[in-house]
Length: 348
Ligand code: NAD
Ligand code: DAU
Image (cartoon, rainbow, N blue to C red):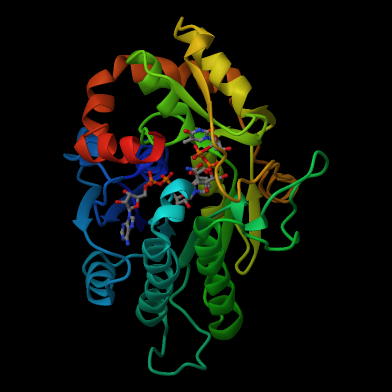
């Protein structure tokens, strides 16, 4: 049975991915997570007793912790979700993004290169244990912003606009460099905006739900006409599984949804689903360097593996809203003191 190390597995997409793997694949899973403010062990409470699952608290930027985990669990695949992920926080504290997303990714790559190499001391050795794989979970934000027309392809220029996007581009390009220089067996995926269960309430959709449930105003940046290419998180997980199994080493694959929605439409739709008035909408100052529009061309992945999203935006959103309503305790716990202090600083 293969052993997959999921870094950042206590976060939003990582925890959904672990659930997806344990349900759909015959693999063992090691969840390696530093438990930052965004990491939550509650997200995996229901699989804690599964004999195929183990949790290690560790930082991808700590080579000793990473190497220890790779050796102890005899890891064959790594899916790297671990990152600082919120654009607004990257404007407040860019250095944290540099550490986790650039330096952390490079350390993780180097530990995996050494552990999987057939001659670890020889930098010219391009031979690795059979079947090993590293997947870097990158983002559409590395491409920057689109105008009204067109979509990002894998060969679109890398032009990040926020410290978050720049740090993700740095990690993404380090993976490319390891493939080119060391023949390292890695694949990069770049995905659009996800939504679904377990998303931390700093992000737009859970923030709308949290604020609406508390009869608080919903902050909409600028004119609210920025467009995002939403993908239900389970569809991202199924795409990553396809890439893990069938992706070609050294390649980049875009992953995206079929829906483009303006932020204002998303806010209105969620308020309608929660039976809350549009008078809760409050237009606030725009995010500096705010990307106007993202849209992903995922035909390369579709052509290579047959993957396409199963959930429409409406169906995914219904499921998401229902999940938050059924898990209000999770939401209240996630929206802890740190989150309230952050919101006060961000929005007042
Ligand atoms: P998240 O913020 O919900 O979770 C991040 C997780 O990483 C947390 O559990 C945190 O504790 C952990 N972590 C942070 N720094 C770490 C470190 N140095 N070592 C180990 N663990 C660390 O993030 P998310 O939204 O689930 O995103 C996961 C990944 O997917 C990220 O790499 C992100 O860039 C990428 N991505 C996210 C989206 C999206 O819409 N959320 C879209 C495309 C790509
Ligand atoms: O595109 C993929 C990216 O999607 C991921 O790489 C990031 O990790 C993830 O955080 C997300 O980035 P965004 O900046 O697009 O997501 P966020 O939920 O922060 O914002 C979505 C849109 O809503 C964006 O245009 C900004 C806007 N927004 C957000 C917040 C938090 C508001 O108008 N008001 C808000 O309070």
